[in-house]
Length: 206
Image (cartoon, rainbow, N blue to C red; front, side, top):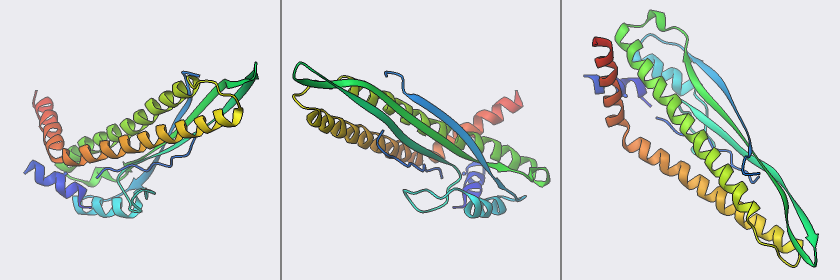
């Protein structure tokens, strides 16, 4: 992984997400929680090894990462039969996101430059995972709206088929959006970290 040493070279710094997607009001019921895993070390190499040992394992890659966002969609749909037609009665989409972040517990023994780099990097890890949660929220709202807008059909079996197709389509779009976000973030990692570090250096000097 060599995350901290990579940042060191930029001064001279990955993030992926864990998505547990499952099918599920223009306002879904959304919850977001946090947990932290502890890492120790007083050098960049020690921190890298701690992240590799203790970072969350993602379902998408099977590897450990510096942060992760667990995402679970759920919900209920009711149907109404009237006048020989069946339509959507009510929709309740739920979304649970759980963000897992690192917490460096022995930074008092590290050099000032390493603490500075870690502060920059850990803030970017959190921003990255918060964006994964935001993408999920946007798709939860999209799913609810599209389900509520479904047309009536002669039978509720037909409406249920529309619900299943719509849910599959929105969740597939969600997965692609998350993957594209990770792709862009990975491609821009070096430039972003250089910019963030320089900004923090300027702020400190001013």
